[in-house]
Image 1 (cartoon, rainbow, N blue to C red):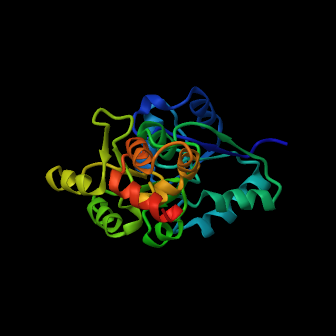
Image 2 (cartoon, rainbow, N blue to C red):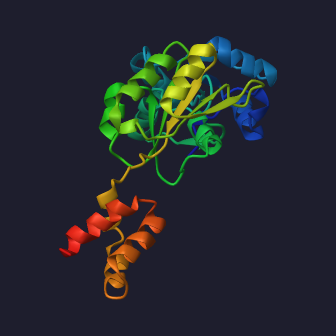
Length: 274
């Protein structure tokens, strides 16, 4: 079966990041589906590719898809799907076209390449073993996953970056999290800004937001109170109880946990009723 649809990743900023295979495929296909003909035309011109472009986006997906499927089945046309930047289907309606291909037994494949969310995760320095991507910032989505212990990734525009940071600031669940904001990835003015939300708000109040942004929020850092910390060291406390004085235990545990010695003393005293 001939592959009839290629999902082709494109550069997220630096045009030199386009893969050799991506260029080869776009030269091979009959028609390219894209979000914005002006943006895709620049990419094609840069790589000496001359192919007809058809706009495909959220607004016209339901109209375009039947025409694409019909053209593939009846005329053996080969299509490529690209986004303005990065990997198609990430925050765009490409999945609808894929489902239509599945329903019609049409063969498709993906040509890997840049993805802003993954590139930002690599640059951030935040835990990458568990992460959630929620597309462009959405308060409801963020609230739904705020209790999960994952790095959160989302996109944002320069016009909304400050209001989004204000929302994060007012959500108590993110008070102790580290936040990384990355802008203009792969370009000359690529910038990675790290810090707590107050610092980031101050930063963008003093530096006009420009370019496209990726926001990453670290997994939540739970702050334990003194009793919770000491409860985690009960084995040590109980081991020392039969060997040294309460005063000496308090000194040792205080040094080990960085908790005030009197607090440790009263905790042990109440624990063992001494």
